[in-house]
Amino acid sequence: MKSPAPARAPRHAAATTLILMLGAALAGCGSGNSSPISSAAPGPASSSAGAGSGNGALASCSSYPGAKSCYFLTVIAAGAQAFHGTDTMPNEETCGAVLSHDAASNAGEVQLSAPVFITGPVAAFYTYLDKYHGPGTYTTAGSDADVRFLIGTTEYDASGSSSAVRAVAGANGSVSVTFTKLAGSAGPAKTISGHAQFTCRNA
Image (cartoon, rainbow, N blue to C red; front, side, top):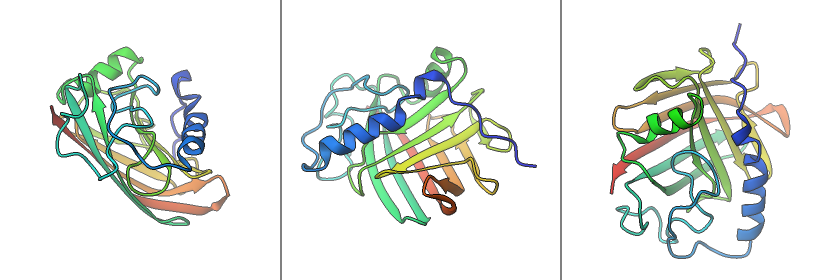
């Protein structure tokens, strides 16, 4: 029997509200120039609505003052909704420290997030690693991995009976995520599957 998805800590309660607000704000405009690191959303790689470049993912972190590393994210999904988006998010820690630092600050939980994508529709992608213990594999079956993916106004998560998430955290802070049959808020039969790659590079 599939273990239930890990419960979200209070710091994530506003995730859906945040992306809906950002989506409304960006509906009539494109991404501007890059902006400094913001604490608008918690966890590694959280960035402000204007972070990133309208020309696609950045080649380095030099456009983010104060960043010690950056996540270069690609998400691809298919099913009820197709999605292919990229984003670049600054971190205040180096690649080797970013995951363990977030876990130490948040009762053992890591959140990797991209509130707004540079390419693709307005969307938010969140990966959660509970009981973080360093490099290794985290899964929904082990109740230590979860995904929340909002595309427009439809939210997908691992609450479905056939949903599964597998995240592999590397020693350099990079994380590879495979998600299968995430259940959509439009109905349990509306599912998406895909892959996300958080590639960490020091500034």
